[in-house]
Image (tube, rainbow, N blue to C red; front, side, top):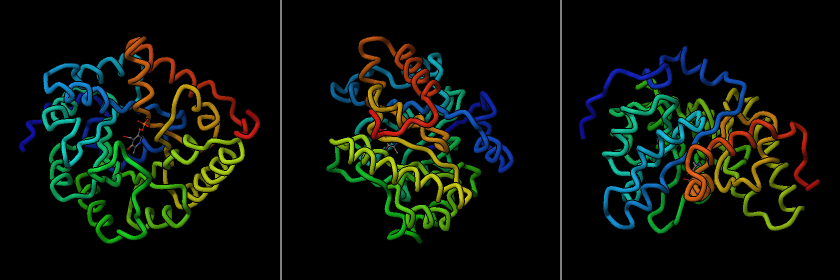
Length: 276
Ligand code: PXP
């Protein structure tokens, strides 16, 4: 697949130099990345051309999304190559491509040149990404993919569970950033379990910063559960998909994004999860 790239629309899409990558990673205000995969899921359910995830990205930007996230899966179950190409040409904020460490997908990424690539585990039988990438076990394969992406001046992000060894392995593999899997928190059924999950996230954020990593969060975050996570100091980017797309069905994408962004920006900074 060849991508005929248009001139970049903004600094974010400007095939970032290392200096720009560092500036992006220095941003203090938490960013909201909107994952538009599920718009493509609805389209693929009927095999037609609507709803278009590229339109969803435009609407998300108009609602204040700081980043647009898409996952080009090996099985192409939702986002298609055409979507990736058009998103690259039209998105003017940060473009974050989720991907497996498969050679075919890395080839596409280095040709497409999104702002950031987030390496995730991928299993055909899963409904969505379940858990984080095991960077400890797959260190050399992961590091090879990171090297190729970094050589193409793409910001690299590892989607991992909040486990200190995974953070250390991610730093060793050369990632700029990690996205901590927040599923442990989102799926917790009791205040105690939520408290434990929050404590693990706090620890992982601290370890990540000690290692010089930018630390993001995502998975399972909703309008109901975002506040305690947004209140955690040190998470600089959230990636949220299913909940925003679900709300957008009723209130529209712009409003859904605006509402989530407000929740993130107004979360009280020291709130503890157990206190809800
Ligand atoms: N971050 C990553 C790395 C993901 O794989 C996903 C799911 O595609 C998300 C965030 C968003 O998760 P959710 O759809 O539960 O908000």
